[in-house]
Length: 301
Image 1 (cartoon, rainbow, N blue to C red):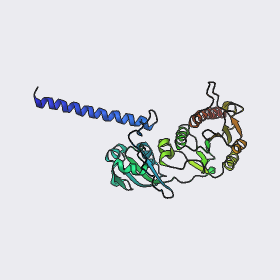
Image 2: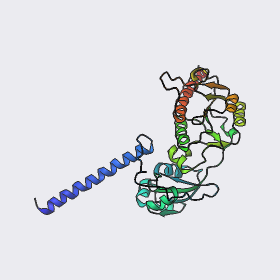
Image 3: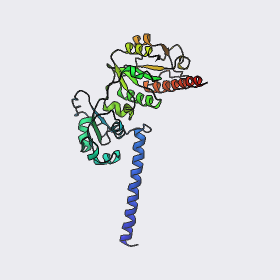
Image 4: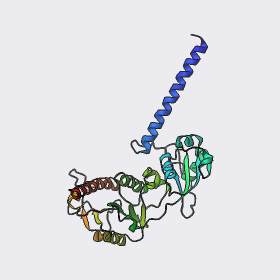
């Protein structure tokens, strides 16, 4: 075999290896975006001790991450201000010609994005400056059979995970308080993995008043409590359900407990009797969907 033949074969192998490596990376990234595998912890390589978050203007929101930004770009209600992106990330977004998008696109380095979102953010080379989504009113939800209400759940990672479950089970909205709850942000949107663009996120000033309005709209409001008097499956009594979950650690506030239609618990026969609020939300949503499917089936017969 000549040197040229060897080089050609080696080049072919290198090209194939590069192609397969790209495919493996794309599959791995897709799984991470769907939450099927964890995102690697990059804190060991980076430090945010010298980083300071930029002062945001009113309604200004920075979204980052491939899946999050792609979902925002697909949302007609989302106002786009500027896309900052690396050349590689732009190719992976697969959104066409930069000059034809209708908003500014700036090609930057990963370090440029880190100056805005911080060195620990998993931005994947893409940052979208946008505006907060339009405010929705509770009376717009009168046709929704299933809602999720959060009583001062403060962790944006938990709220984002809850939003994903809410979208998966086709809930009509996630309702929360204006105080002691995360506002629309890059962290919330990244944790929601695109769900922020698919479900109304409604923040109310007074949760007890909001629950009263939901009652007038025909919703049974069920507060989840580990010491609830009955299992959730035996508590359903309406064609419209609003699940109410309390904050991490403290649970439902007393005023909320007094205002909901019913208190219920999740049946957990094991030694652990409480779950992370996002896990509890997913289980309660599943139980609610089973109930609503039964109601719908009975209505047809």
